[in-house]
Image (cartoon, rainbow, N blue to C red; front, side, top):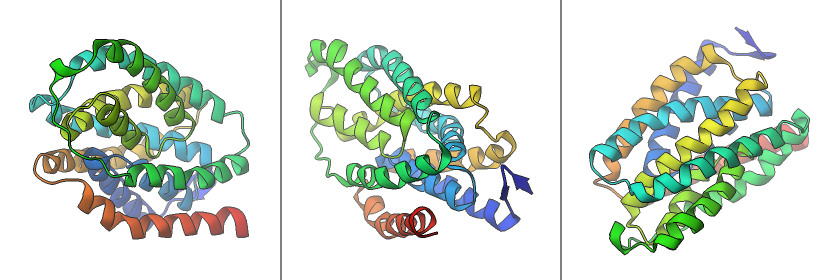
Length: 260
């Protein structure tokens, strides 16, 4: 079928569904699922801005499964959530509006240039520090968190991949949450920033709803299994096994935007 000038065959659809599952699993464990989704959409033939919008609709709905698991296991730090969600939503909306001003070729090159940043952030080691919610400085929660989440939210709307890892790093090092609590709380921030960016892409007509349906289902399954695994296994194995595939995706995008 023809979508936005891209010929989405059955094989391409199946490949995108596999990417959506992998992205959901990875994102729920260590963040960085967009590092799989955005390049996959572009390589499937979607224009860069449509690829960014499509990543938002898939990851926004897919994150619900991970949030459900983390909330059920009481890993979310709610005092930080209350102060950070509005900042993430507003920051992401502004970021998404900003990227819409660029032409598609420029956006493609911006994505290619920023992918290494997202990859580096996703692979930064995160040491496990066990601190309780009571030990968190309230000034940091009510002033530091909104500022940090606004800035990361802008990045999420403007680009996206690596946002989950950035949020985990901020919560882990700035607020000193243990790694699982940082990952759990970051999901709610990421959900709010996804919503903010999604609204901007929706208003600009950059979403493909029919294509999103099967991908959302696969992303939900991946998020559910990944967040359950996060309670038992660390993110190191996932990050290592993905390194080769991420480099191949970058090489493919480099060929697409720089050599053709």
